[in-house]
Image 1 (cartoon, rainbow, N blue to C red):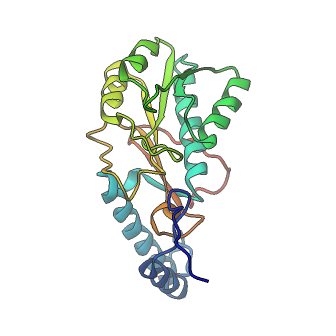
Image 2: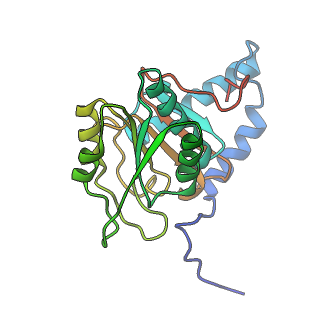
Length: 231
């Protein structure tokens, strides 16, 4: 039976190009990229090339890109990193919106249980958060602001650049869930003043189980799993 698939906001089919590239990588680059032997070094070169490609999608440095198992892991790691970074400076307040993905909201619930204070800003009838509300909510003890770029249910696109400018001027880390935006909207982490950003390949014709986290240079990433630094 033929049908029209109209749920690309949830997930996309993998492209033929991505499928063929994956098959070639599994056949040719099977070595551990941390190993010194030839198969390992070939795998390391391929991994570096992939890191450069992803970095190019968002105007980042390849050394700022970390591969994950998907967008939810990237969001979790980003928020925990921002929270622990702020905690070292006595900052235990986080700002987000009531409109976020569960990967963000549930992580914020966990941080609340650990003693962090979370402020969830409202979104208005057009589905947007207002930058002036973000500015008004920032306090001296605010560690992080977390706002999604594009909403996964109604498609609203948030004023990320304006919010990023506010956060940078206030010295507050800015996390962006860009899972729904990657492959569709322009992402420039430098211009938008983004410190941490999550994407997921399956949203734009890549494989499931592959995501990436951008973590700006100078921010120490918090590990979710100990002993797995090779990704």
